[in-house]
Length: 137
Image 1 (tube, one colour):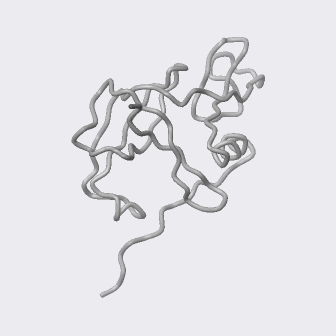
Image 2: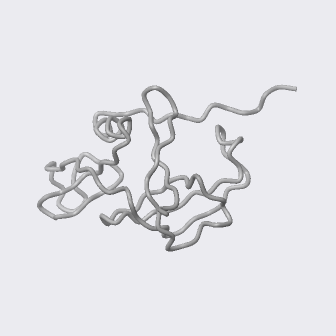
């Protein structure tokens, strides 16, 4: 019998996303901020979604928020076979952006819309720490 568990795919940082992944390696959550629009945006882009300008700053954020929506995955995608069932949640950060992420350190049956969460980190390699969220107790 062959082993059917595959390696979890790793993100490949680009010139646009490099600051995000460098901060994540230090367990810091940074997202782009447009000072003209006084707004954050996620996922990383070359220009501001609000103004179209290239004046974006990287700012460290609290990493705290609440569950907007979620789903429990019972049939895992490649690289997640050993995690099923697992929860994927849409998280509204307190800073006003929405992020899609895995929920960890919580039973899937305990996740609720509105649940307060905080960022935590999964060490995927020597170079990549990946964001996830856990209950903010």
